[in-house]
Every structure is written in structure tokens, then in C-alpha cells.
Length: 154
Image 1: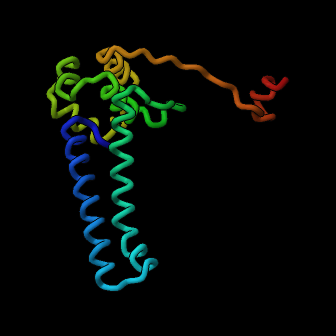
Image 2: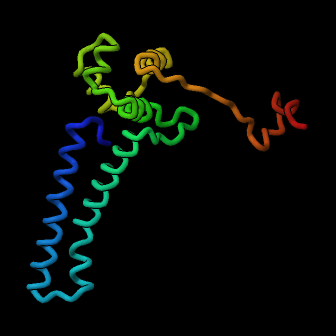
Image 3: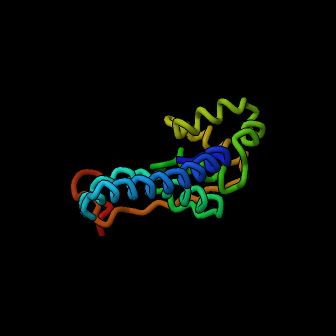
């Protein structure tokens, strides 16, 4: 996951390099006389890496536009906090200043996707970046029929 402008610029430059490398490698394979299907198989790993990098760049660009997606049952909360910071246009340094911590702490937390973050700390980050989170609970379609849950059935 791209977390800041520096990583984004590096990824874009790398994407351009990989595109040239892919084209050059394809030309070399053609010069070697490989059939189309053989060249395709030989290029698949390079294309796979290129596509993955391209997805990361596009994902960061979506985040910058504020397109965050959904958070379900708090799965991916850490990634969402990183995404929200990006969408709000804040650097890691700026977030660190708002939280009163060193930039390296924010960088480390984001690299670990805030693994094991407490609700209190997540709330503090949301407050710092001025984002409000709304929650809604949905009952399962068919609750279990036994024990204490039996009273919930219609």
C-alpha cells in the first residue's frame, strides 16, 4: 500500500521503468525467435508485477480523491485510517503533529496498518483528522434457534 506522496512518486517512476523494461524484454524475446505463446509465458511474471504496481498507484489516486470504500465489522480499520489520512490530504508528518507524536511513530504504525489499535486510539486519530465515523448494526438474517437467541426469532 502506498502511504505518502514520496512513495507515490517512486511507484509512478518505477511503473514507467517497468513498462520500458517489459517492452525491451519483449523485443529481445522476439529477436530470439520465440513464438508468441512462448513470449507471453516468459513475460507473465513481469506483467504480473507491473499490474500489481499499477493497482497500487490507482488505489492511492482513488484515496486522494476521497474514494475509500466501506469498512465492515472493523476489518481493515488500520488500512482505513491510513486511507482517511491520505484522503484528507495530510502527510504523516502533519498527522504526527496533530497527535503530538514523532513522525516515525506514525510511519511505523501505518507500515503495520495500526495492528492491535485500541478503539480509544482510533478515535483520537479520527478526531485529529476531523473525520466522523458512523456505525450501524444489522441483525443476521437467521439468528441461531437455540438458547438465549431463541427469543429473538419472529
